[in-house]
Image (tube, rainbow, N blue to C red; front, side, top):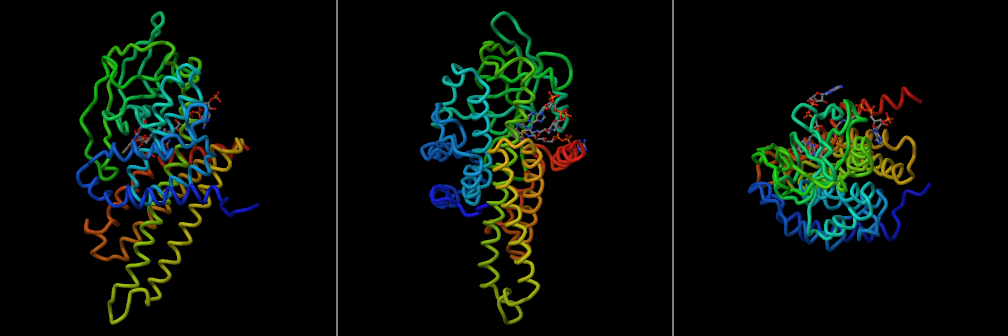
Length: 379
Ligand code: FAD
Ligand code: 2MC
């Protein structure tokens, strides 16, 4: 067993770190404040391959393992959590179309997604179906060579600014077996967008409800067969959960680095805060938890790369553990900054606001425990 990164992984890590330092970090606070979705920078990230990290090379992606992708996303997230989190969702959508769509469908959409010409959204959650995703009600009725979609989705990341929607909709009876997945052009007639939600964090990307009112799409836009959509949605989320976890780790790393510098500069009681043992112990715990979170994410990514039968449970474990620990690390970093941590002049409050939602989306951390416990009790 070798825990060292390969030369190639180090090279990817370096280029992601450079991109984060030059393109993301300097503007992250402004994008958060002004709620700017940085389309120019997102498209530039496509030139680096960041819009198709684990998308197969046949469709212009880099075809990287999930482990390498996690290393890259971690570095990007240290520059801007919210932008990178959107990049991960886009990557998940491109990968789903490439993996489960027909070659013609994939050829039509995916290379343009990888280049950044088209951006994607993942549409599973509904007003009445969040954690219980298999209860979704959006219907897709077959009509000759088309499907007609009716229903609504809630909390869709990027919605209103993206061009490609992967939509899970019901073609059959109740439960997961009745769900299919479709590629829906975001500007198709009958696709309506709700207001941009006002959020605690992830402010630089829009989140909106979407309503489908008799939206007609070609039957060829279905991914795989009827009834396979729920499993496709879950397979997408296995990787998505690693991504959300690794974004949390990258953000926590940025918060820890800021705190590490600050406590050596800030003087109270005639000495730097770093001289206080309680501060040292807090930093030691933060680093220990951060390393544990990172290693758990990398183990889960490796399991997914190996198509290990317990990969989904490891992805759920990593998402739960890394998002909880990373939130705590960022919150502790804010505490070490005292009142200054609460000011928008420093990045800590943004890190805490951005990380909070990682414990909720792509499956809440309670749902992650359900997945892990089911696997544990089934084995
Ligand atoms: P609920 O399912 O109503 O859960 C409420 C509470 O009950 C939670 O604490 C939950 O853990 C708990 N709970 C529910 N069931 C159980 C159980 N069986 N056991 C124990 N506890 C339980 N969705 C998309 O499809 N695409 C997106 O792009 C997307 N982006 C998002 C962006 C943001 C900013 C947010 C906030 C959400 C986004 N979501 C997206 C939706 C997100 O995945 C859901 O919010 C999440 O899955 C939880 O669903 P819910 O909000 O309906 O909560
Ligand atoms: N990979 C492949 N197949 C899977 C799978 C996975 N990871 N997970 C489940 N399936 C299959 C499963 O095998 C079963 O098929 P079969 O009966 O043929 O074996 C089918 O899917 C149904 O699975 P379950 O019986 O586990 O379904 P259930 O309804 O009990 O619960 C649960 C599934 C709770 C895990 C799922 O509903 C879930 O993940 N809920 C959380 C929803 C969520 O994560 N939403 C995120 C939205 S996206 C987002 O937030 C973004 C920011 C993008």
